[in-house]
Image 1: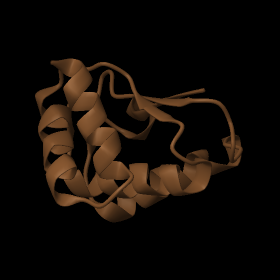
Image 2: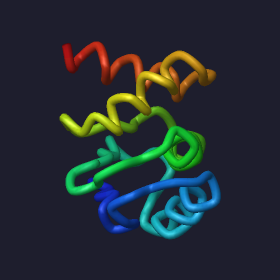
Image 3: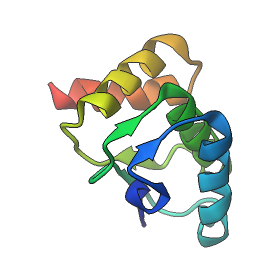
Image 4: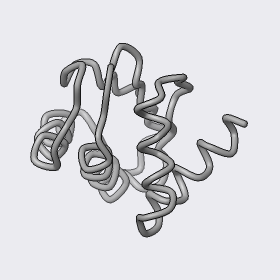
Length: 103
């Protein structure tokens, strides 16, 4: 399954908006599903709080089968760097793994 974040807007900010986006897609998810891919295409900017809320809830709900699709968006990359350093597992691991693969 691919989650296209552009469905939630081109600028994704605030923790409440991240929670609202997750709650909107939750009915389409099944815990234990195969890999769920998160697609940042056509998103102009994101904040660490939005991504933290959305991805943390996603990981808590379906497990660690979350994959971030490739992006060159500097806002996304900067946000992932912040989360890799500042957050607890498993979100920090997801962010670090993505950034290491990007090199």
